[in-house]
Amino acid sequence: MRFGWPMIALLTILLVLTAAITVSSRVWMLESHRELAQAEKEYNELLDKEHALKIELIARTDINTIERRARQELSMQPMWPTQWRVVKP
Image (tube, helix red, strand yellow):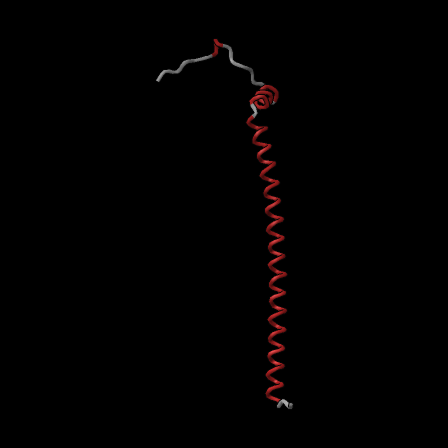
């Protein structure tokens, strides 16, 4: 069975196109994997930041912590009943 040069050229072009499609799909898959890994890394960093912010929120809304900071840093003291003023509308 003898093939002419057009048939060999067609098979060569088909082989080159198949190789190009295979390589491009592999490159696309690697790029997608890289983007997914980056997105997962950012997601985990955001989860860590959220966790830290939740802990900070709990610490900042703790009444004992607020009172201690008010007394130490701002030198605040509870009001005496004689210092209270009632404001009527």
